Amino acid sequence: MSSEEVEGYYEKVRSESRETIASVLPRIILDVSAAILIWLFGRLVFVPIAEGIYFLGYPLPQLLNFILIVALAVIVFRMIFDVRRLIEGLAGFAACEIGAPYDVSPEEVEHYRTALRGVFDIIVVSLIYMLFVDFLSRIHVALSGVALLAIVVWAIYKIWRVVQAVSEEIRRYTTAWAKKALSKP
Image (tube, rainbow, N blue to C red; front, side, top):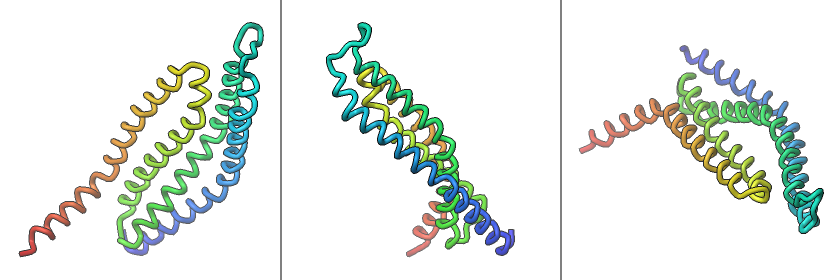
């Protein structure tokens, strides 16, 4: 690719990334605000008030935790597509900002985008887990443990994919560094 084509590619990715971020960020902020308010009221108001109360023979705190989990899940699933688009936009923008000053190829930018998406995915899933863990534990401790195990296995897989995405760049940089370091007297 010529330098003009590469610069055009950077500008296209930056522009698309900015548009994506601007379109989905307000919706995500509203959904996150709603989730936080539901979490706060559920955790600090409704569940403590329900302690020791039974509804048709079932402990009311466990029922409330289930209802809160369902409400949070609806909001999170609604928001997940926007978060995915935001991550895509942030990864594209960051990859261009990281790569452009060093004249990296569009292929390398795609490797960086893949790596950044993987890291962002792990962060988002970890935050979502932290949102649900207390409610899951109040229903049954094993639920939060099983969810955490699944997230850890998934995160290890994602980390492996992140490393694979940038492995060519790592090889190239370490080879260049080794040649430079070994060539000095």
